[in-house]
Length: 382
Ligand code: MG
Image 1 (cartoon, helix red, strand yellow):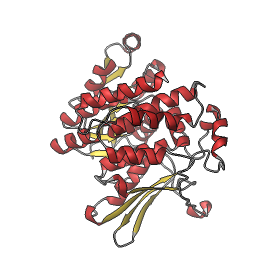
Image 2 (image 1 turned 60 degrees about the horizontal axis):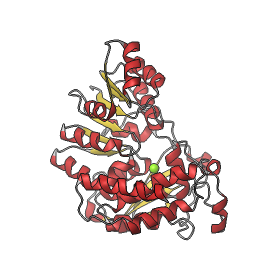
Image 3 (image 1 turned 90 degrees about the vertical axis):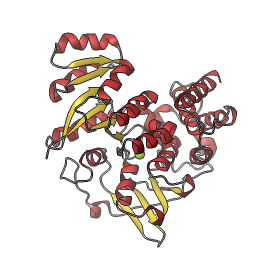
């Protein structure tokens, strides 16, 4: 078996770290030939020395210059948004794993598909903002879009080989976040960034941890699933499952439900995106169900956590609305972490942006980016 040649965009983040572990454990399946990172030059240097990629890219020119001095001519060193596109379209790359947060991954994702690469998507923004464009490009160039989010990887595995007309519902599981047991809405005004950054079951980056506390993470995942699996958002439900052992489920018309269970570790979804459609023994540990004992399920508290309702609304309205929701949330989260707005104001800001910024029904990529900018400006002004 020849290894899949992977360009890893976002190597210095949390998903990037797990991807590096998979590559380390499965050298016969995965070879990293392109690496990008933010300006954490030291970490990039380490990863470059370890994996010896053909090319790397940094966010800014200064870090690129420093790395050139360290690495000499052993690999090509790019920077900025152009650099990401270079990595996404390297001739030898088979699969581009996008793990950079924010909108920066969007153009490289589209360039990768155009260049005939498969895409593994860990950045929610890409599908939330421009799912229609990304899936259309994948269809046009006959490429796969493979989910790396644990829930979507679960759905992908449960749907494999099934007739899509027999799917009744997708059921996304959700840990419920650290405030699952809060009784009164008023208590959420006392939430501090420190409290919100304490996730009960997953260890992840700051933004996604905060999104898990507001449930916007699950809302974004509903929209993501809508595009990945071509299922209307009305047929996508969320169930609270505090143990995070079942990663998601598919209900079929005959009443049968298929679920995917595994340890809550991102290595498995990354590995499956790389080895798909094959399975190999990897670095993730096996699940001991008897030591877990029980699994629990609850209804989401829509009254206290409006994120799911807002996401469903954005998904149904379509057009630029999911991009507005995503951008407004990103800025509101930053304001909350800076201590500038109280926790519940994250939802309220997003709802106001959705009610204010005009909807473009069938937007071009440019119109999506304009709506994204408008939402950011709107929240920052408040
Ligand atoms: Mg997830």
